[in-house]
Image 1 (cartoon, rainbow, N blue to C red):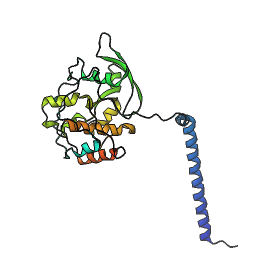
Image 2: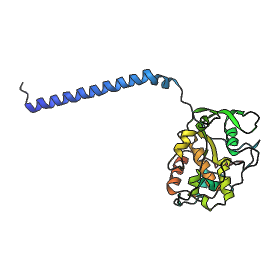
Image 3: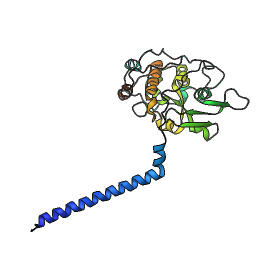
Image 4: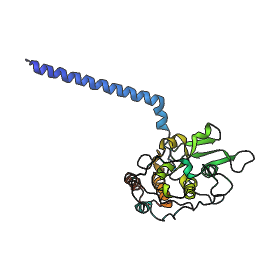
Length: 265
């Protein structure tokens, strides 16, 4: 049988393609085996840990409520979101943290500063510093943004691993209505337990002044609570949302349409 030159070339080309595919398959198999025998077998063996679905808000046993500008509407967070004004961002160049008062004041006048109030609220097995009933020296918690189990130890370096996050970042609030608040109202916003969560330091740094359109917690289990909490803070302090932010919030709440607003009561 005579084989034409063109048929011979086609056969060689198909042969080369087949060898390339076999080589790629072999490389993929080797990479998979290497992953399994190094880290993969442990990842497969360990059950997935579900992250927290909510974060603490208020403990009436030793905390006192901070009076907001407006009462938070009860009911679905989606309905409260529709009640927020939608506008563009105001300028950020005039933002100054001092516009929200001295950091971590004892705004609720319970005798302890806000940072230690939040650590005490959010951590388990809390240990206080010697001769203090306020200064939290150690504790542990299931961190809400990353779902990691974290041990807190007070110290110049270790304290940075656990930070107090403003759920609605102060710089974001400044650009969305806080400039119109009184100094006292801004001070309340910065120290309101509703707007504060003990969180993983690097995650908090990554968030920065981001809103729901630019940053959401890695732990998807808490996103409904997190977004509802942002909506509740913005309703409480007459802040607005941008169009992109509102769209992002609605996308999150579509998975939990019954999610209620959050209050510190």
